[in-house]
Length: 267
Ligand SMILES: Nc1ncnc2c1ncn2[C@@H]1O[C@H](COP(=O)(O)OP(=O)(O)OP(=O)(O)O)[C@@H](O)[C@H]1O
Image 1: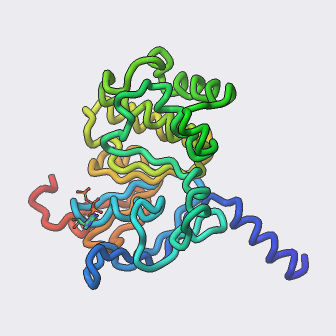
Image 2: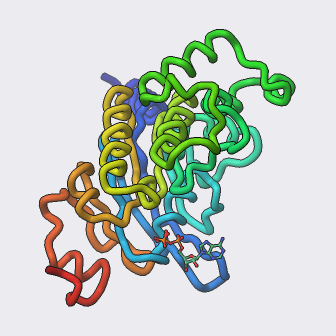
Image 3: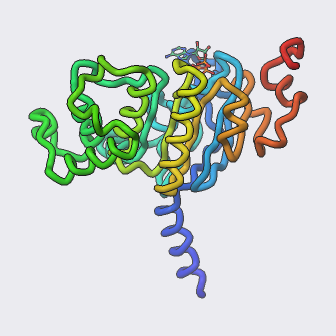
């Protein structure tokens, strides 16, 4: 293969690959006080990455920089051939369509039905006028029903979101994220408000759905046991730096000390 062909193949691969490459990412909410101090990570195009670390260490900031709920101060976030850190306006809206996000507090439209909440995952795809009228195509309605079935919520389609339990809400939120046909799924402490059994069910559901779709997942999570159980890779953060990056099995007490500090809390 000649060099031009090889370079255009590499370019095409970057355009389609769902690998996420973060280079020297810095976020300062207050100038001169970085919350993220030059994070560099290369995440594979599939698999579950759990981000762990103490409160206030910048985990949410990192995840929110990826989908640009937070604007990075410096650095690159390369995904599907684009630098998400540099996008604005229409380009950013188009890129965001394909980034699914699941939140700790679900972020559902409480007074709307489960079905309407799932359909809202398509809002980035329909015209502003149709979105305003909440007019969705038959195909979208069909897909929303299928997704509700897949997350075990088909029987609740007409129920208002505010009548659901936390676990049910998170199932709806996952269906809404999947409705975006995401290329990556981000989750910011998706189980922190849930009981232990429901937490496992929700992580099971997210990992199963991501595997079916062959998309990468990045999850912020406080529960180290759950992180080790579900993740293929663990990134441990401390004070805005990555201090562990490796397999769940490799995460030892010495790493937990480096991530969380102290050791009295370790068994
Ligand atoms: N919008 C904001 N404006 C100013 N400072 C912020 C903002 N969001 C977060 N911070 C600060 O940035 C730091 C990192 O917060 P972040 O929420 O990213 O941490 P975290 O590791 O996700 O914490 P937790 O586990 O408690 O959610 C904290 O000191 C926080 O106060």
